[in-house]
Image 1 (cartoon, one colour):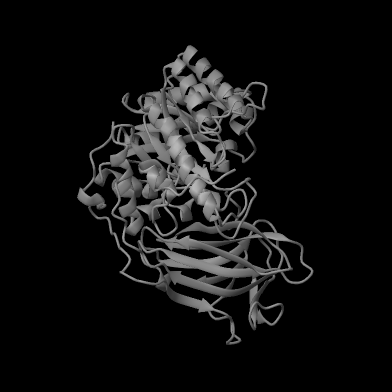
Image 2 (cartoon, one colour):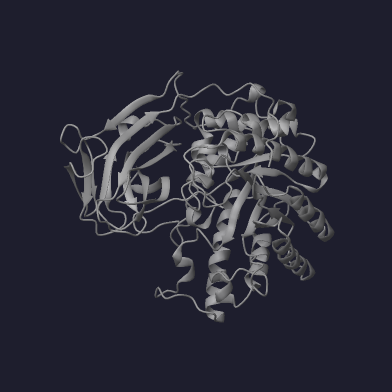
Length: 538
């Protein structure tokens, strides 16, 4: 799983180390610039536009788009109309460079609406980050439906892990070229509280298993870095080791952002989990095109081409990291129990006419990485009986064929109503295959269904979630001897992928720590359930 990112041209889109430092203080590698937020008691409004001046107040058109102040359906007195859009990334932008510091967290908020008579469209907000002539695109809030009937708030947290030459906040759409109305933009510096003096999760679980966390570069600077180093003993690079991050263009490798996470982990005595070498998602289009730009077909020639690309990719990663990364998700999400053969019919599958590429990927990885590096197959919903059976059959087949698969990763993206015993049953079953097992991407959704979208989290659900974490970790700790690690998919709620998938879900709060880095009932459910409020009925 992943947190969405965006580009102008297209949508986008799991042995405990020694404790890092006394008191959980984060350590930073040599040459690593770490800026912490200044002590503050309240959030600090840095920039606001409401167009009451009658001017565009710093907003400019992006691409072919034009911007103009209008009294058409304003939220306040006047608003900004974005028109003339000829591409989805065309919109309105404002320069925020002067207000953003490394390692400080900010909230970006704007209200959007469509002009009267326009058809509903999915809009989103993004920051373009320019550094040394290269542009990157950081999603702040992903696709959210907007109509002509009401103003919709778009807000999200934002931070940077390294200095940028220029930062532009902008509004864009998924596919629609509709005009857009914009009003009441604010940029606010979030007041950072002290990290709570709590028993670190990694110390509480030291006799059970290493507790890990998937992070992005902003989580290894500032206050989030303190929280990370205090509570966790392992890190997964959430998006920065995926194919599109490591090799965006064929033959051009970029380890910069992954290296930032790795350097932090090593400085703090944390193990590193690599994610992922092969996936159907977040893989650049060029992987599946021939030299003429035509789609690869199910031919031996094209299979050899794709395997050569994979081997080049894996060898580059292995040459760069060696055994510094102790385990890798070699193939990710290749199982589909709804298919007759139990495999996902991805472009990899189509080109090979089946799942032979899975065996090839493990053999390529085993040849490339030192023997001590462990190789895993990783998937979601392995707690459900149908997915469990399909994954079991695949791993059993791989083992029988002598494929060097060392272990199975259970992602464990679960919800607060799912029976925790299901995951335990899967762990018990895979013991039969004598493979290593790990929980790679744990989070506990508080939504009643995946399309539910609420403005705030119902408090009773946070209490229920605390009890769920208690019951789930009872299941996992009972099987501690069968687990190499348990990894959370995110450090704190505000950076969770569930806030924007599959729709905007501002109420989602699936992790141990809230938006302000404070422990929730989820934390106490694991560490001390006596501190939980009574379990809600129903």
